[in-house]
Length: 393
Image (tube, rainbow, N blue to C red; front, side, top):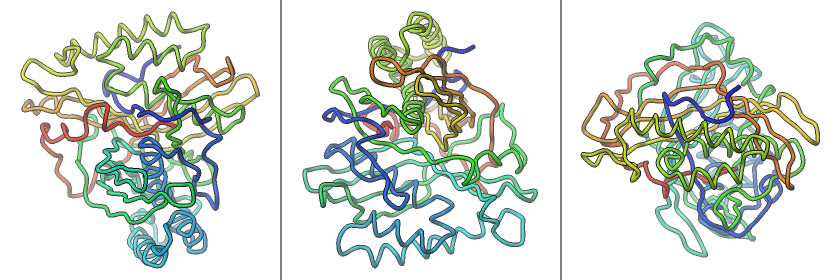
């Protein structure tokens, strides 16, 4: 049993920013399928931008007009709902082809439409509004037919306003994001393998942006939703670049998230893993190589499935996308993305969910982006660093 790390083949993703304590999985609630109720903080804005983008790329949003319009009404700021509905309807029309696979029409129950947020850069923030640029990976297709769902990368700029004591969507725009190749050790799966992640079988991750003053996620709700949030945060934090480069941060993170029964062994295991990654990548404690190139690691959750749950223990499976590599002149170290299923085992301890194991399992690999060349290694410096980490769950 692995008690700690996603594989070193693609160290990956996310770190928090600061806000007042607020219970993860309880502060954020859902209205018509849209997470609402964010902290009035940078992390809260990052979480809202991420969730609104994820919702807008979900199967229900893209295939059900009534559900889509209800969701837009929840997300949109006053005065922007009309334009937002038109934009959403147009996006849904454009998505039909990608959700059909090679079948003659869209099978809603078989659609695969998932979005993972790999980085979140705050372009502007004050008490009244925020602008956040996300780097996302999407997987679109069908578990029916013979065409494997395809991955894609987008840069999404989300403009938010603080209204009615929450972050509301003022505008968003998307373009092609940084394109990274799929890890050379991973081969695409066949469509039926994606059946565990069709709409009825799995849920989108929900990020809360709620944190303790330590910068780590606030306590999770004592319910199944709380276990999923804890599992999402764990995989994101294990992929944060500081996990590999900053021993003090790693040990504090583990103390905040790992169960006491495994803390010693997890700390020992992850210390070894981090040293190995840094040696293999030629990276120092500042996260850079001798020539100034930067370690890039991110993990995004694409979807979650509860495997088992009781009020004292739970197991959650996540489908994740992990980016790992070095942003610099050496193209042989160019960041690559790996798609893995992760199993997170948890126990209820000290008023929150703590992990007992974070274990990589079978890959679930989409087809690479169609007709898109990978970006050069040095271009990925723009998504590196702790400040570009997405909010946690």
